[in-house]
Image 1: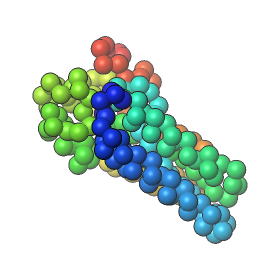
Image 2: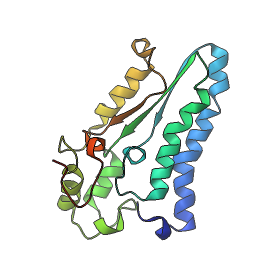
Image 3: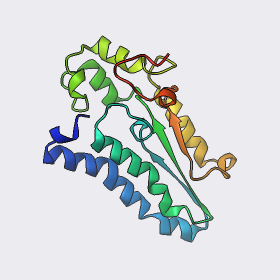
Image 4: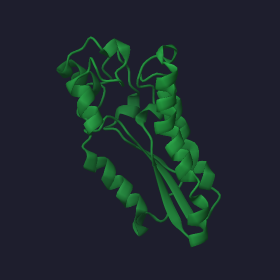
Length: 176
């Protein structure tokens, strides 16, 4: 994640392929769900689409677009569609960025000077719960959205961010 003007064409293409093309291809399956008479789609987006997190406009734009693709099936009364927008979650990609922030390709340029401890503290200090998410905290919500118990939930954009989007991400001051 870096300023828009610093992305190479290759980096831009990679981000588009990873974050938008896969979602577009998933949305092409909506007719199959419609033919089955019911269904549920859960898109995984990012807190970057919910608040300014200093991730650069290309990543934020993709997150906004991704979370709004639910409009594809919005008018289909038998298909539910929701988006889950996590903040930093302890995955292999995030572990790589935390352990090697100078080399992580998703690190904003102003974070490249920080060591691993500072990088993690910088992220968690902007989060009211003061930690990053565990994978189960995100996957549990996704699983719930597929259950019959969630049959009246559709068109929702749900943050799993430890409260970060309440105040937005501000790299210069602590929100609380």
